[in-house]
Amino acid sequence: MMYQNPDQPGTSLPRTLLILLQVSLALLLASTAQAQSEEQMPTSADAEDVKQRVDTLKEPLYNPFVERYLLDEVKNLRNELLNTRAELIEKVVDKELTVADKTMSYATDTVTYFFYLIAGATSILVVIGWNSIRDMRSQLTSLAEKRVNELVIEYEKRLKDIEEQLQQKSDIIQQNQEEIERTNEVHSLWLKASQETSHQNKISVYDQILDLRPDDVEALSYKADAVLELQEPLWAISLCLRALKLAPDNGHAHYQLACAYAEIGRWEDAVNTLSKAVEISEAYRDDASVDPSFSQLQEHEQFRAVVFPDNGQEEEDEELPS
Image (cartoon, rainbow, N blue to C red; front, side, top):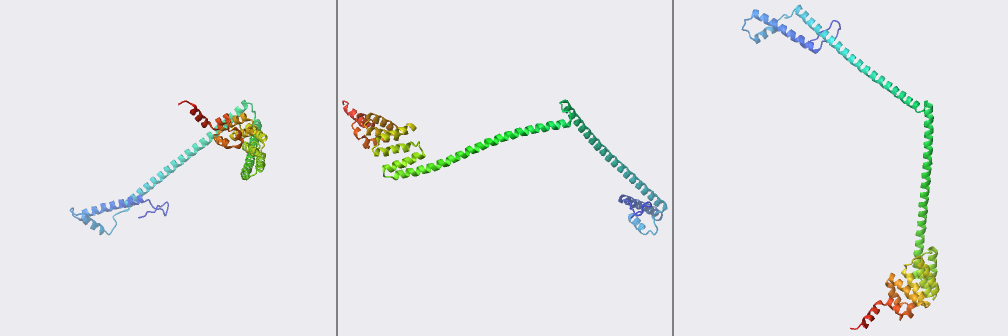
């Protein structure tokens, strides 16, 4: 059921008004039906009879007065809705205005505080001697240039140090490479010397090793051994003394020196030097016992004490009375 507003054609009432109108019409119909039933029906009629009576009605139960009453109620409800809508719109507008006012106030306060901060900073700058923004800019520029120059000098120094370290490491790498090559060459020369049968060729190989490593004690001592085989004891003594100057605890150099002393007849020096070699390594006792360089010292008491210490102890035990 739709009701057309005379002020605004084509608009419909809200659903609530329609329901209210239907309920009102139902109540009016019910009251009218009850009145007519009381006139025409006995008082003992039940609800079914009333319903049948209402269904058989041929004329409407309402009249112009009831219609006018309903229309007034609907109008009042519409006016109340319009008033409510107007109040709601007014409150929403007031709320939006309040929010906008607070926003503008916040923005104004922020800008004001910002300008206060700028004014305070400017005052401080004026107090400490910077009278204008231009002076401040010039001071900052000079400070920045000074700091940049200091950084440039510092980094140049660091780069120079890094270059020196790289150069040192490069030199060390170069030296290591040369040392590796020299070691490989010396190793090959030692193999060559071990394969030579001629003492003169061995001396030549040892000279090549000493050219590469002048302070090679082993090369000096083994060269002295080869020189002794060529019956050159004085040359051997010179080589051994040179080796012992570089390495005083080298047992092989002491042993070859002792052999050289024995070759020229310096028995005491030979025995003393051999004793030092034996102190370094017991293996030189066996070498000395069969070495032809010590053939003339086999009966020498000190020599036998150094080379055959066990035999001397056995002789002393035999001399003791039982």
